[in-house]
Image (cartoon, rainbow, N blue to C red; front, top):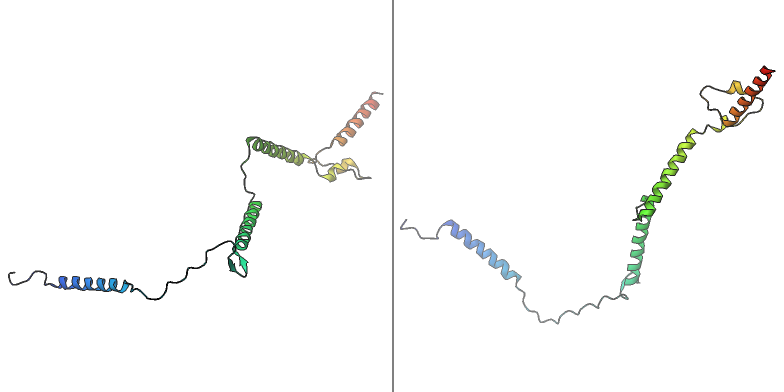
Amino acid sequence: MAGRRRGAGPLWALGGAALGLCLAGVAGQLVEPSTAPPKPKPPPLTKETVVFWDMRLWHVVGIFSLFVLSIIITLCCVFNCRVPRTRKEIEARYLQRKAAKMYTDKLETVPPLNELTEVPGDDKKKKKKKDSVDTVAIKVEEDEKNEAKKKKGEK
């Protein structure tokens, strides 16, 4: 151990090589001052600056905002977005839906049109089916016939 010098190993040589590479990279980043005049600044961006296709900046912003607004309106109409409402409007809408549901439930009980109308020359008893729904007019006619039979039977 006495003959060996401190720091003379391969690790020391590797560290020195790494340090040399770092210093070379830093030296490459140093900028030499140039004698050329500084570059002129671009003109400031104003609303009258021509952007492209001879359109000013405010033209481009306006067209873009109209495009975005039309997309938002279209999406809201297609997907029926919910808009915050007052409590009264929500309750009124609930009652309206409830009334519409009751109305459709009542309509389901109404018999089809061909059962409600009378066809001339048809016998009602032949046409009458067990599963058909009697209308008010048919019931009234049957009651009148039954009453007429009772009166004839009493005489």
